[in-house]
Length: 366
Image 1 (tube, rainbow, N blue to C red):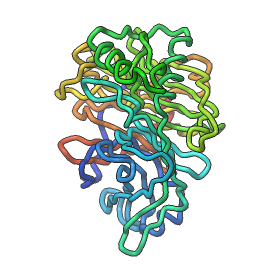
Image 2 (image 1 turned 180 degrees about the horizontal axis):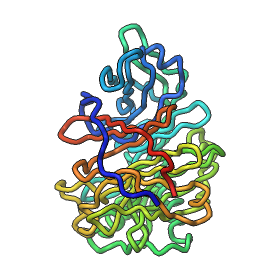
Image 3 (image 1 turned 180 degrees about the vertical axis):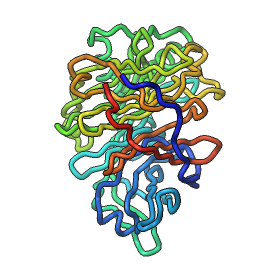
Image 4 (image 1 turned 90 degrees about the horizontal axis):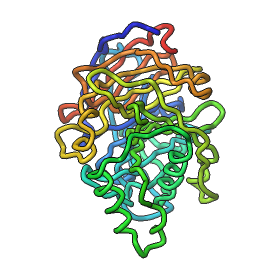
C-alpha cells in the first residue's frame, strides 16, 4: 500500500462550459481530431443539465504551448438519431473500438422519482467528429432509450451477486422506487421497477482491453459502505438494437475516503493493468438530496483517487491504494490519463469547470 498523498494537483484552466456541470473525462485518441483542433492532447467530457445533443465537450491543449497554459474548451454539437425524446443527465463516457459511448445516470432528481429521460445510452464515432476552421465541432450520434431495462438488469445482478448491500431506507424507497413504480403502472415498463429494487446512479464507465464494460455506481453501495463496480458483456447491443447486456460480475472496492463511512464512485479509468477510481459522497451536499437525508454518513466523504490491480479486482480482491485525496475539492467529477500516463481531473466547483493535472505516481496500485 502506498502512503496517502494529499492534493498536490495543479489547476490548469477554468473552462467556460455553461451550464458547467461537467461529468466524466475521457482521452481523445484520434490524432486527426486533435490536429484539426490544433491540440497535442485532449479529452471528452459531458455536461449533465442539457439534452444529449448538447452534452459533449472537448477540452484540449494547444500544441507547442507549456502544459500549464494553452487549454481550450469547446462544445460538440451532436446530430442525434435513433430514439427521440428528452435524454439528459449524462454522467459517464467510455471508448471502445473507435466509438465514444455516453451514459445517462439512469437515476432521477434529488427527491426522486427515477426518470425515463435519464435512461439512455449513446455513441458517436470518434474519427467522424468534424472540427472546422472556426473550431466548431460536430458529429452524428446514435441515441437509445434503455427504458428501465438496464435498471432491471443491474438490480437483478445486485440481488443475486451475493454481496450484502446497504439497506434502502424508507424515504429513499418511497421517493425513488414506490413513486417510480406508481408512475409506470399500466405501461409496458410497469414490471421493470419492483419493490425491493435500488435506484442505481451510474457515474463512471470504462472498457477493458478485452471489451468488458465497467460501470461505477454512486449508489447503491455495499452494506459496509464500499463502492461498487459492475462488469457487463454484450453491452454494445444496447446501441444497435440487437439486445441487452449481461451483467457478469459485481465488485466492491476498498475505496472509502476520510470523513465518511460510505462512498460512491465518481469516475473510472483503466491504465495498463490498473483500475483507477475516484470516489466521494453519495450525492451533492446542500441540494436537498433524499439520499443524503437518509444516509448522512455519506455526505462528507472526501473525494479520493484510488488504484487497484484490475486482475485482483476481477478475482474478487478489492484492495486499493490511495493515490491522491481532494479534501478541499468535493466535486471531482472525472479522471483520465494521457498517453504519457499523466492524470487529469475535471471538476464543476464554484460554478466553473476546472481541469487538474498531476504526474502519475510510480507504483500506484494494490
